[in-house]
View 1: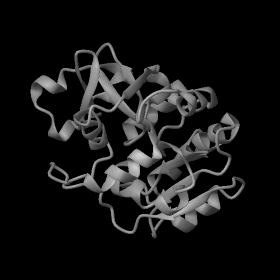
View 2: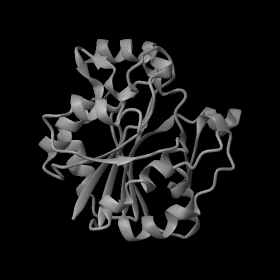
View 3: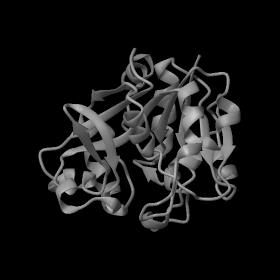
View 4: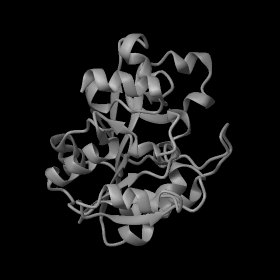
Length: 242
């Protein structure tokens, strides 16, 4: 069984909004509604689990009332790795777990199905490559960089932890993953928080898998499909592309 998790506990601070970030309107609809609709249409899992905070749980439930979702609480903002761990009780029956961030409104149903059904690896992830970080592509500048060794993904280095050489890498991480559940639960407690944010990064699971000589598969995806929205400027870019 495959299950889908959407990480949606973030606040709307950088959006200059009192709304949770995932409820900021994009062309009149909460941005997370686009993703939840695509999840439903993908046929992979029609009852996704949304990881929310105690502060935004009720308002998100109200806005997504027409969709059949489950809700897991992240009571402290300790990072994306911690957020996924908060949903464990809803995921223990799954053998594959697909994980998205709630601020990616353009992910298509076919992409969700492709990621969920991809045959190889304890981790399968999607990556995207930009020509540069100018114009609409500047949305990607602050994303984690994909570090490869002999063509294989070795690690994801978050922007705030990257040196200038790493920042020149143009293959970036949109945050679309599929995990083998047994491997995930055996390893998620190994995440540390020795980084600039003092958070438990979901992306550090890639480094763990590489160090264990586990298979990490990757799928290339178009930059325009994985645009994320973290600021007013990025919202305007997304509105122009929709």
